[in-house]
Image (cartoon, rainbow, N blue to C red; front, side):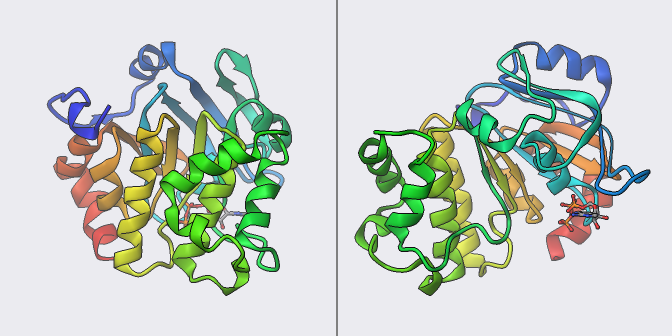
Length: 264
Ligand SMILES: Nc1ncnc2c1ncn2[C@@H]1O[C@H](COP(=O)(O)OP(=O)(O)OP(=O)(O)O)[C@@H](O)[C@H]1O
């Protein structure tokens, strides 16, 4: 499915629960009314809903501190969910540990510290393949199709790579675990505009290769161009949702979120 093929409705919707419940019925992964935080008594997520269907690429955008990365971490067992549920293919995975999630087909690429700098590219990928014994060769061929440069430079130490190349290694490593759902936390952060563009193209290619993608992004406009659907998160709640095109063209979303974000 390309972003252009996503159903077009008239405008972005203020998130409402009944629309979420309807849309989430056949979701591969869904979050319902998540309340989560790091410090006692301080909630960062204040009732977040989200769903993704098989084969979709969805984007999560919103102002700094809105809780976008926290929402992704909550899905990957990295922040304690105080109430609400995360369900993967019908199984309740709320607060499940990351290694159990990887074995269930969830991949996660953190924003920072996402490669082992002293290891080569190949060794980084081997670390990723650890959870899928006997499949290194097959998975390596899969990621080499998506990232040919990594195959050519497989013996190079990850620490000597540029920011964009490290991001590639990080995404490739997560793909080595054979995820059906990939969580990407701000993959374009800190990259030059040209490399940012490459990362968005790669996220699309990963999705077209059959992986469902949930992407948190600060480059909201670019993210909305490639995603099938998006969520605008504000203060730990979904403010708006719709197709990428609806959100990008909605006057309220532009006024409140895209005007300043686009200049960032
Ligand atoms: N490990 C942590 N311990 C305590 N508070 C945290 C931690 N990580 C994030 N926070 C706080 O949670 C809030 C939301 O952070 P989060 O990183 O989820 O926001 P975000 O929407 O991804 O924003 P940004 O685009 O700035 O990364 C912020 O106020 C942040 O300071």
